[in-house]
Image (tube, rainbow, N blue to C red):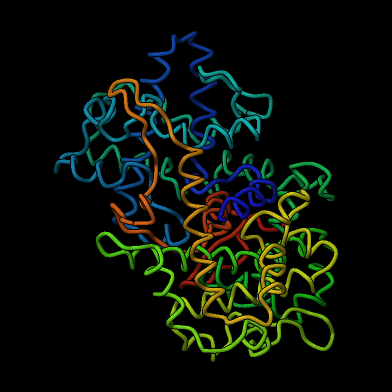
Length: 472
C-alpha cells in the first residue's frame, strides 16, 4: 500500500527522492555536464570525469566532516563516505583508485543515477543518457562556487594539506556559496505562487515546512511537522498555512500514511509469524486469537474519536489506549480509524487522503474499500473477520508477486519476487518482512534545503536558514 504514498509524494515534492541526499551534488553534476559538453567528451570520458569530481568533493567533505561536525549537523554525509575513509591513508586519498568503476560507487555514472530524474525535472541536465546541461543550469554561478573541482580532478592523489586548502568544496559550504544561491532560487521559485505547475507545488511544500518550523519546535522533521500539521489547531488557523492550498492535501496524506504504516506492520507481523511450513488457516487463527470476542461493530464503536466538535482531525492514532495493545490489534484499530476518516474528510484533505483518481479510492485495502468491508461484517464476529482479512492479504501478496514475475533467461526459470510462498494452502517464507512508514521525503528535503541555505539546524532544532527569506 506504500505505492499510494509514493505516488502522491512524487507529485507534492518534485525534484527530491529518498536517495537525493545533498544539495551540492545537483550543482556538481550540472558543472560536470557543462564541462563535458565544453570539452566534447565521449561517454566513457564523461563518466570518468564525473566519478573523479564526486570523489574530490567526497574526500574534501569527509575530511571536513570529521574535523567540523557541527557544520554538517543538518546534512547527510557525502556519498562514498565510508569507502573514502576506508581507503584514505595518513597522507590523503588516491583519487584514481577511488574513482575506478565499482570502488566508491558501483554504477559507471557514480551517484548521478540517484539524482538524474530530479536533475532532469529541474532542467539542470538534459534527458540524454550522456550527461549534458539543461536550460536551467547557470554555469557561471556553479563554476564560481564549485569550479575549483576542475583543478583537482586530474590529480592522481590529494594530500591532506590540499584537502584542507580546498575546504570550500565541502558539501556544507553550498549553504553560503554562489552555486547554493542559484540552487536555492531554482528550488524555491519565488515567482511561482500557485500550485499550477511543479515549481509552484514544490514552492508551497517548502513554504509549508518552513512555516511549521517557525511555529513550533522541530527536531525530527517528518515526525514533528506531521503531527503539528495534522492535529494542532494552530496549523488550521494560521493565516500562512491556511492560505497554502497544499496544506490540506498534505494533511490528508499524513493521515492516510497511518493506514499505510499499519498495513505494512500487520503484514510484517503475519509474515514473520510463519514458522516453517504453516497452514494458512493456522496463520489466520494466529491473528484471530489475539482479538476480543466481539462483533466488528462493537470493535469499531470502541475506538477513539477521529474528529473534534469543529470537524478537525484529532490524533486518534496516538491514543494511549491503542499504544498499549498488541501490535496486530493496534494495527487493525488504526486501519479501522483510517476507514472512518475516509468518510469524514472533505475537500483537499480528502484528495490527499484517497487521491484524485477514482480507482485509487476503491482499490483493495484502501480506506474506502475497508470501510465497506467493515460495514458488511458489522454484526459478525471480529475474529472471523480477521481470518477473512488474513486470507485476503495472503491472496493479494501472491497476485502481486506473480504480476512482478520475470523469466531469468540465463537460468531458464521464472523468478517470482516474494518472501511468502503458497502451495496447496501451505505457507512458508524465505526471509523476514520489514515494517515502517512510507517516506514523505521531508527528512531528505530538509537536508537538501539546509545544503542551499534555505533551512538550518542548530543543537538539534531546525530553523530558517540564511537564505530562508525565499520561502519564509
